[in-house]
Amino acid sequence: MSQYTVLFDANVLYPAPMRDALMQLAVTDLFKAKWTADIHREWIDALLRNEPHRERAALERTRDLMDMATRDCLVTGYEALVPALILPDPDPARSGGRYRRAL
Image (cartoon, rainbow, N blue to C red):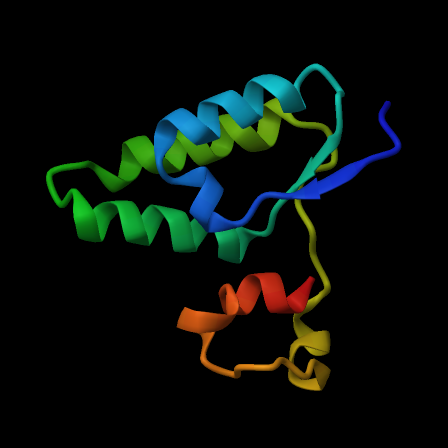
Protein backbone atom coordinates (compact mmCIF):
# COMPACT_ATOMS: atom_id res chain seq x y z
CA MET A 1 0.00 0.00 0.00
CA SER A 2 1.20 3.49 -0.84
CA GLN A 3 2.44 6.01 1.67
CA TYR A 4 0.68 8.80 -0.24
CA THR A 5 -2.91 9.84 0.47
CA VAL A 6 -5.01 11.86 -1.95
CA LEU A 7 -8.34 13.48 -1.11
CA PHE A 8 -10.59 13.47 -4.18
CA ASP A 9 -12.76 16.57 -4.14
CA ALA A 10 -16.00 16.83 -6.09
CA ASN A 11 -14.32 18.82 -8.85
CA VAL A 12 -12.23 15.76 -9.81
CA LEU A 13 -15.05 13.23 -9.42
CA TYR A 14 -17.16 15.11 -11.96
CA PRO A 15 -16.46 15.11 -14.92
CA ALA A 16 -16.50 11.37 -15.42
CA PRO A 17 -13.32 11.02 -17.55
CA MET A 18 -11.21 12.53 -14.78
CA ARG A 19 -12.93 10.37 -12.15
CA ASP A 20 -12.34 7.26 -14.27
CA ALA A 21 -8.64 8.04 -14.76
CA LEU A 22 -8.08 8.74 -11.07
CA MET A 23 -9.97 5.62 -10.04
CA GLN A 24 -7.79 3.54 -12.38
CA LEU A 25 -4.75 4.89 -10.56
CA ALA A 26 -6.33 4.46 -7.13
CA VAL A 27 -7.03 0.76 -7.56
CA THR A 28 -3.36 0.15 -8.42
CA ASP A 29 -2.41 1.39 -4.93
CA LEU A 30 -0.29 4.17 -6.42
CA PHE A 31 -1.87 6.27 -3.66
CA LYS A 32 -4.59 5.94 -1.04
CA ALA A 33 -7.72 7.60 -2.42
CA LYS A 34 -10.02 9.28 0.10
CA TRP A 35 -13.34 11.12 -0.04
CA THR A 36 -16.39 11.75 2.12
CA ALA A 37 -20.09 11.06 1.72
CA ASP A 38 -20.50 14.85 1.45
CA ILE A 39 -18.06 14.95 -1.47
CA HIS A 40 -20.06 12.20 -3.17
CA ARG A 41 -23.25 14.23 -2.66
CA GLU A 42 -21.57 17.33 -4.06
CA TRP A 43 -20.41 15.74 -7.34
CA ILE A 44 -23.69 13.87 -7.84
CA ASP A 45 -25.76 17.02 -7.23
CA ALA A 46 -23.54 19.06 -9.59
CA LEU A 47 -23.86 16.46 -12.32
CA LEU A 48 -27.65 16.33 -11.95
CA ARG A 49 -27.87 20.15 -12.08
CA ASN A 50 -25.86 20.23 -15.31
CA GLU A 51 -27.32 17.06 -16.83
CA PRO A 52 -30.87 16.69 -15.49
CA HIS A 53 -31.60 13.76 -17.82
CA ARG A 54 -29.27 11.57 -15.72
CA GLU A 55 -30.76 9.20 -13.17
CA ARG A 56 -29.71 9.64 -9.55
CA ALA A 57 -29.89 5.86 -9.02
CA ALA A 58 -27.24 5.26 -11.68
CA LEU A 59 -24.94 7.85 -10.12
CA GLU A 60 -25.47 6.36 -6.67
CA ARG A 61 -24.50 2.99 -8.12
CA THR A 62 -21.29 4.58 -9.42
CA ARG A 63 -20.69 5.96 -5.92
CA ASP A 64 -21.23 2.54 -4.37
CA LEU A 65 -18.89 0.87 -6.86
CA MET A 66 -16.21 3.46 -6.12
CA ASP A 67 -16.55 2.80 -2.39
CA MET A 68 -16.31 -0.95 -2.90
CA ALA A 69 -13.34 -0.78 -5.29
CA THR A 70 -11.19 1.45 -3.11
CA ARG A 71 -9.89 0.23 0.21
CA ASP A 72 -10.61 2.44 3.25
CA CYS A 73 -11.71 5.38 1.11
CA LEU A 74 -14.42 7.04 3.19
CA VAL A 75 -13.31 9.77 5.59
CA THR A 76 -15.66 10.18 8.54
CA GLY A 77 -15.71 12.09 11.80
CA TYR A 78 -14.36 15.36 10.40
CA GLU A 79 -17.54 17.42 10.72
CA ALA A 80 -16.73 18.80 14.18
CA LEU A 81 -13.50 20.31 12.81
CA VAL A 82 -15.18 22.47 10.18
CA PRO A 83 -16.19 25.41 12.44
CA ALA A 84 -12.62 25.74 13.76
CA LEU A 85 -11.03 26.19 10.34
CA ILE A 86 -9.97 29.65 9.24
CA LEU A 87 -9.80 30.26 5.51
CA PRO A 88 -8.64 33.29 3.55
CA ASP A 89 -12.06 33.46 1.88
CA PRO A 90 -15.02 32.01 3.78
CA ASP A 91 -17.14 31.76 0.61
CA PRO A 92 -17.18 28.03 -0.29
CA ALA A 93 -17.58 28.84 -3.99
CA ARG A 94 -14.23 30.65 -3.99
CA SER A 95 -12.36 28.72 -1.33
CA GLY A 96 -12.56 25.26 -2.84
CA GLY A 97 -15.69 23.94 -1.21
CA ARG A 98 -16.70 23.29 2.35
CA TYR A 99 -15.64 19.65 2.15
CA ARG A 100 -12.06 20.41 1.28
CA ARG A 101 -12.03 22.89 4.17
CA ALA A 102 -12.89 20.10 6.54
CA LEU A 103 -9.97 17.96 5.53
